[in-house]
Length: 108
Image (cartoon, helix red, strand yellow):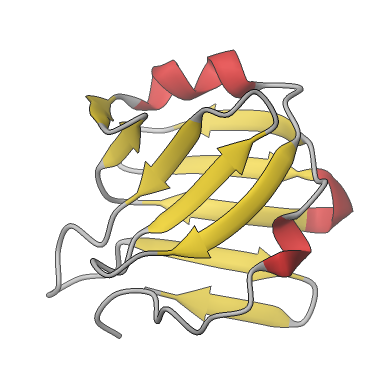
């Protein structure tokens, strides 16, 4: 898959809380309420600025207001404070991120 399609229904992210940020050598895992998770193996941006996985820790306990895809195929999570975390499709030859939400499995 090349990028997250604009038409992807990501409404399941709404009103979930970021519970955990797990940082590994090559992956970062975000765990939300309602058993939703995002596994990241790509570049991360916060408010349109490059970020590192530890930078995501400031969102712990924050609630997602909305989630969407953009033209570049990135996942954009907007939190109630108005800050946006973008998970990019930074390598079209390999998986960039995975979203798991119950029976829904999206691999980009």
